[in-house]
Image (cartoon, rainbow, N blue to C red; front, side, top):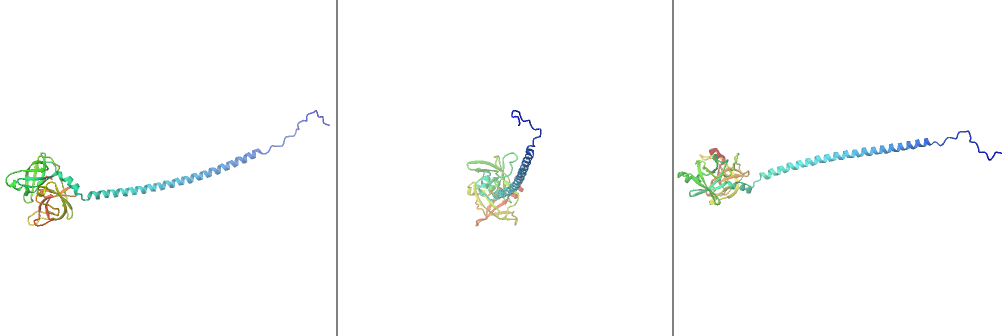
Length: 278
């Protein structure tokens, strides 16, 4: 019998190996790696899809911007065309406002007519003007040279510098400084709208409108004339005939007797060529 008072001696045989913890840990690590790889793949796929979607959005935005730019360019071109069209439309009020300060009633003895400032300032200062010869004829033929320009309650002396009896044009000069009107560089055409400014029957700052009826070439010794249908009366003689661009195209000179709607004007080129003050 064993002695109960004696301790059992430890066995000299080795303990059996512990459970395969390393293998389990390896499997866990492998599983985690697979999960991470799958997650990374899914994330990469999502990132790739997101990149494609962003690129597609950028392409669409670029296309939309290009389309907007094209539409804006088209609108800008249309706006410019409309502005040009509006500027080209006949506006008698704008023409009259620009022209009236340069137009005067002329008093030559017992006769009255109209004169207008033209071109650049005179050589020694002052202003050059055109009117009809028949407006100042009585003064000129009587040896006088002084006439008067009138606007509202103002009166300015002017001198008859030179006359062209054949074409019914006279050149005046005054020491006062006024804005000279611009003359047209091209001849008028039938149907062109015009404004006539003058002092019919002494009524200064009168404005009428109409169209050019015809351009009559020189015939039987008389020079070319512009025929128009704007109403004129005695006192309009010497007044400017203005186009829609606020340029002088002629000098109103006569109304056909016993007829309505037939006014005549000296083409401004005749006056400018003869006096060289335009």
